[in-house]
Image 1 (spheres, rainbow, N blue to C red):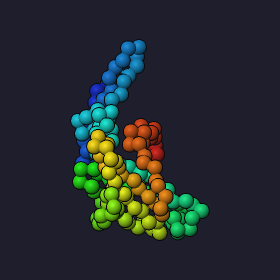
Image 2 (image 1 turned 120 degrees about the horizontal axis):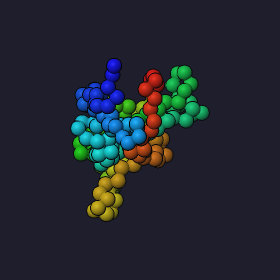
Image 3 (image 1 turned 180 degrees about the horizontal axis):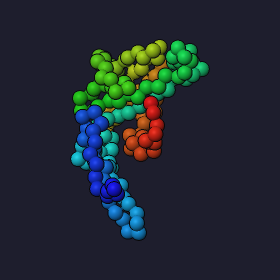
Image 4 (image 1 turned 60 degrees about the horizontal axis):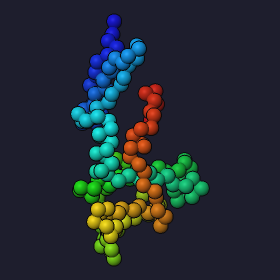
Length: 159
């Protein structure tokens, strides 16, 4: 026999997660996810304030952005705002920023794609600094962390 309600604790890397199943009216159940002791919604809100995220997929038609198998290379580029740490596919990069007119540029090369992370003043003290990512001179749209964390994930999916 097994319990249908209650909570189960698990870890993803060093992060403690809890999934809680509570009874709801009419033989239904409500599921809640807590990450680092915070509700999923609060956790994603904090992530949105702490990080900037860009998802870049090299154009498969562009020989510079393809891998040896001919598939497009995908990159997840994250900037942690309080430390200005730059992560590419969850690996910390140590890149140097150069002062330019109006802000800084951080250049780095992945495969044959040149990326430039620009930090510029918004001109508005409430908005602060605006970060823009360029790939081979073309702006990469910023991804919304909340939307990505809401995407359905199959427990059967393998990567």
